[in-house]
Amino acid sequence: MTALMTSNTEQQPTQKHSVAEEAGLNTGSVLVSLPDKEKVVPLASKTFSTPVGELLIKANQYGLSHLSLTEMDEALWVDESHPSHLDAAGYLSQTELEIRQYFSGSREVFSVPLAPQGTEFQKQVWQALLELSHGEYCSYSDIAQKINRPKAVRAVGAANGANRIAIIIPCHRVIGKNGQLTGYAYGIDMKRQLLGLEGNTDRKTILF
Image 1 (cartoon, rainbow, N blue to C red):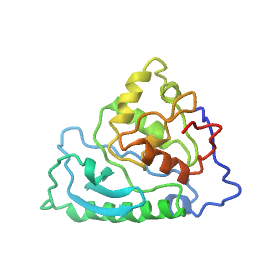
Image 2: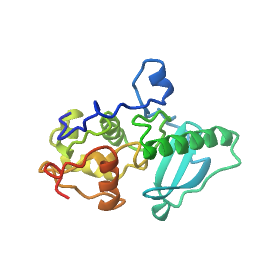
Image 3: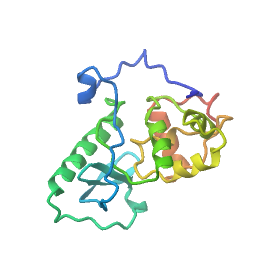
């Protein structure tokens, strides 16, 4: 995928916290496969404060399913009586820890399993986003090329907008081909703040 800009990571060594990285595998968070014939609902949820506002996270028995600003929460039932509630709660604790590390500057790669529901096309787009490195960004057309659907630029934009796991599936790293910030579900200010945190502050490249 073509990156429009990358941050200078050589000047700021990254502290790694993922189990995969410690084992020598820089894989980061992955989209897990959900069962086709089973209705999967969130089993646990929690909120916590961050520099961009209060976040709401939800998880099912397979991994993190939602991460959004509390004020933009989807009204989804959480089944806390499910036998796998504690497993889901464990994913929430892991997510909160990793998000706090991200905002403190000590984490660039997330490792919590991701289990959002979506179409196969949406998941292809989300996987392409997950493959973007910290400090790297791209355009919708870059993603379309990456998934071998070069004419599906608008569909890629729609899939990007349907992302239910903000920050970790980094839809904020998608910008216009001319370097301008494109629309973002949580507002341009939050997008600018996340990109700035990741080192994308070159105003010659990004037109704020």
